[in-house]
Length: 295
Image (cartoon, rainbow, N blue to C red; front, side, top):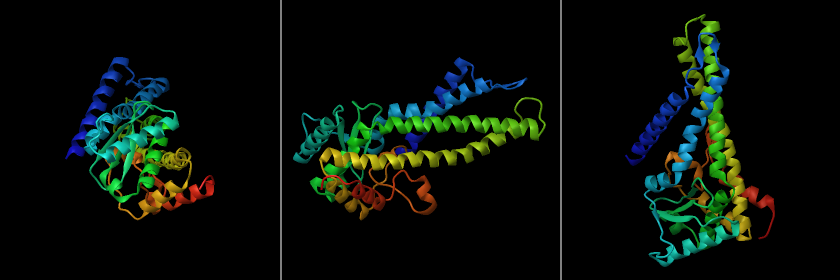
């Protein structure tokens, strides 16, 4: 129920911001009596394309805490020795990576972990209780190194920018195709007819699928970099290989859709692999072993 409320609230907020912004700027009038105003459409597409991804990025940290029920550990008053170790380990890894010390949180759930936040120096690393119970300290350290590497690499911002760019292209070209079909194929001379709106909807669905594949591909590449980053921060690739090997035999915990790409594990088979945010664990292990480095 909480996830549904979160999803609806986010989309309502995005729509309200979009409606107000477009009305103020007057850039929602790209269909004119003289044809399609490409410049106005480009501005419209940029606003629509980047608004959602920007809002999601800026709200990612509080939304992640709320949607997973995570509890942020007070670094000055951890409740247990395990929490003290978690905070110390994340902070040491952050210091090595040259970034600000992120907040550290624990949430109830099956094995998983994630990092999120719009800024490198104000991020969040969260670990599930299932992961802590299932792994050795060395393996947990490797997972934490992977998440800290995500922050240091600026992966959250990069993926949001990529999402914004592909969204912009989807919005722009869907309306160009809709205009061509409406004016040239259906010979409609008065504004946007039913053919225009129907074509835009279909094109947004089709282009949106292609856009999702592009974003997923970039997401998979960042997982390889984060694995390598963990190996660098820990001074050895062995802990990350052990952690991935352990994860390969586990049932991963589900994260809210918004933060699925931020988790430590994911992936898919067949056609689903094209939309997977994470590469298969076997491929990640092979990449680490092929990279060389210290053992």
